[in-house]
Each structure stands twice: as structure tokens, then as C-alpha cells.
Length: 160
Figure 1 (tube, rainbow, N blue to C red):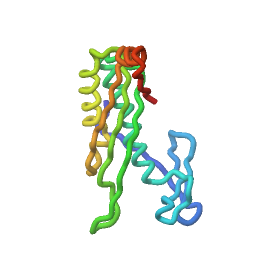
Figure 2: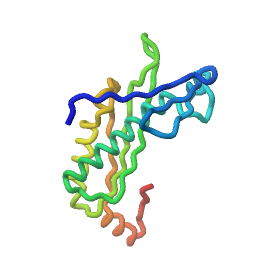
Figure 3: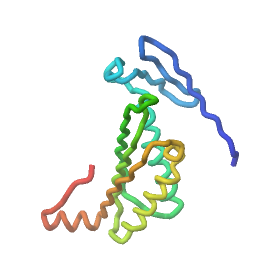
Figure 4: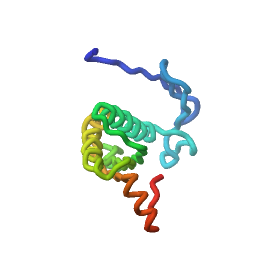
């Protein structure tokens, strides 16, 4: 395995505060804009979305690989990532990123191991390790056997 990789993207301006970004290895190209709160166009991906999406996709791929290597079978994984930007003396920056993975495992006995793997994935995720923002992991683990038992008793909750 190499010890250095380079990833390239290109961006070009299309209109004021907006443009298109592409990568030679990836499709499709993506239209982007500054956020509306910074005089950008609504309904477009923003650089801020790209950063938060990078965290989300890195976490999912990191956890998936770790779970496979550790032989942890899981039924589903979804993650919501929320990035907060704040203005300080130097300008705007991401100050906190909340990771809210929702993991569904088959058996209650897997909960503790699943939680450890979620924590390891947060620490191992390349994008997270590259940021200076505060990272907050807020995992939710649901066991299928627990879910089915609650459903029988009429206290089912759903994981979406």
C-alpha cells in the first residue's frame, strides 16, 4: 500500500458566488453555491454541505470496513451529521460537528461491541482526524431482538 495519495477536483465559476465542481474519477459534476445566508443561491450544495458530507461518508465507509474486519454483522447504519459554524476574530469556521449514527444490530448482546466500533470509527475516520472542530459522537444502537420485544408489548419505536 502506498503511503501517499493525491485527490484532485476542479471548480469553475458559473455565476456570482456559484459554480460547478468535478473530479476526473467521479460523476456527476455538482452545482454549488455559497449558502443563501451568505448571498448564495438556494437549493444548491454548498462548500459547507460538502465538508459535512465528507464527514458522513467517511464515517460510514470507515465503520463498514471496521465492522467487516471485526465480523460484526449489522442490519443497517444511517448517520446524521450536523456542522455548526460560528464567527470568531478570524472569521467564520466550523466549531463543532455532531455525528449521530443510528445502528441496528440483530442481537442485544452485540450492543457493547457495536458501540465500541462506532467509537473506533469516529477516531479512525480520516476526514474527522483532519479537522480542528470539536467532534461529538451521539450514537444510537437498536437491537432487532429488543425492537421485536418492544413491538410485541406495544412500545415499539422506529428507527429510520
